[in-house]
Structures are given as structure tokens and as C-alpha cells.
Length: 230
Ligand SMILES: Nc1nc2c(ncn2[C@@H]2O[C@H](COP(=O)(O)OP(=O)(O)OP(=O)(O)O)[C@@H](O)[C@H]2O)c(=O)[nH]1
Ligand SMILES: C=C(OP(=O)(O)O)C(=O)O
Image (cartoon, rainbow, N blue to C red):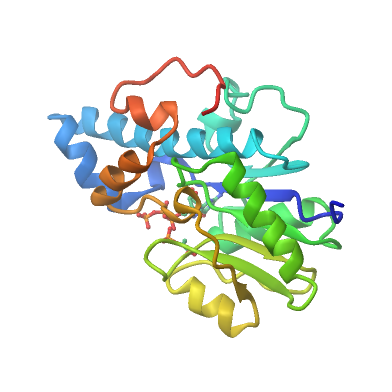
């Protein structure tokens, strides 16, 4: 039986022009002009988020609070084909005070009185089945702990945090240790797509080897995103 709340997810997406600065070298390889590099960078950050969101929407997630002020996701040309008019998606304005503030805004959108998941949006190899499996494991863990998390492939970051009301998200450098120290249970499942976030250029090769969604696969070409999923 599904316990209420835990299939509600908050996903933050930073403004593309400010996001993923550690990936700048990847864009420099595919474009020779500053303008071209800027566009390639924004397209890459967008592709990572689009593929993550497509997997989320193919999962059993009940509601999605998408916290962003990025015009390509939430602006006048939105909704984007990936998010579409999906009734599960609730757009929340980014307060502009960093990642944890954005996450809090997403949690508060639903009142903050039930368990909720927080998933970062740089997981282009994420599979819907992995997310469902991890959410089920988190549901079980929440019977004995205030939160559960999935560490990223380096072991230092957090890709998914599921928290009961009252637990404070501690995203940022060293978040896996911070979440564990605050009492969250580290989930141990074999979820390579869920664990492999893309922070530095070498991560791109590694997620491509796992198998990424259509947007990241096509980069630096911008694909006609049709909202399909693997
Ligand atoms: N809405 C929102 N999302 C954020 C913010 N900061 C990070 N994120 C999201 O959190 C996820 C992980 O981001 P990071 O890789 O830690 O941060 P980043 O600032 O984009 O990348 P770097 O500049 O390379 O450190 C991505 O999905 C980002 O879009 C923020 O201030 N607001
Ligand atoms: C933002 C985080 O990770 P990364 O910088 O690895 O994306 C985090 O783990 O809180």
C-alpha cells in the first residue's frame, strides 16, 4: 500500500545561465565563440534537467513541485514539452536565495505536513523504475528514521532525500555526511542512474555509458523533445 506523501517530489532547477559552472569546459569543447559556448552551456544544463524530469514523470510520483525561475522551464514559452500540461506538476517560483531555500519553497507549497522527496535535476541517466524502487525503500526507512537519502556516485552528495516533517534538508557540499549526521538513513540500493549526477565534464561520459535520456544524448544538438521516455 502506498503511504501518503512520499510520492510527492520537489525538484529544483536553477536558472540555466547560472547553473552548472563546473561543466563550462564541456561547452568550450563544442563551441568556439563565447556566444556559442554560452548557448551550448545553457542547452546542456537544460538537457540534464529535461531528462531528469522525463524520468520523474514516467514514475509513480503523485505530485511534482518544480521550483524554478528559469524561463525555458517556467516562462512564457513554457510549459516545456517534457513537463507539458501534466496535472501533477506545480510550478513554484525560486526565491533566489540558493538551493536549500528553493527546496524549502517546494516543500512549503504542500504545507510541509507530510513526507516528501527532494530530487536534484542533474540525473540524465535516471530510470523511472529506479526512482520508484528508491521511494519504496525510503518509505520503509521512514518508519524508523526522520529521513532517508541516496548518496551520489562520489558518496559526498545527495541525489534523493525523503524527509518527514521537521527534518531540515542540508543540500550543498558534503550533503551526504550532513544528512547522515542529522539522522537520515543512507539507502543502499543499486540505482546507477539515480546516483550518477553530472557535475564535471567526465561525468558526461560516465552517464552516457549508463544510457541517458534523449536530450542529453543529442547534446550539443538541441533535439525536438517529444516528452517520451526510455
Ligand atoms: N531552483 C534552484 N535549483 C538549484 C539551485 N542551486 C542548485 N539547484 C539545482 O540543484 C541541482 C544540483 O545543482 P548543483 O550541481 O549542486 O549546483 P549548480 O550551481 O547548478 O552547479 P555548479 O555551478 O557547477 O556548482 C541542479 O538540479 C540545480 O539546478 C538554486 O539556487 N535554485
Ligand atoms: C548539491 C549537491 O550535490 P552536487 O554539488 O554534487 O550536485 C548536494 O549533494 O547537495
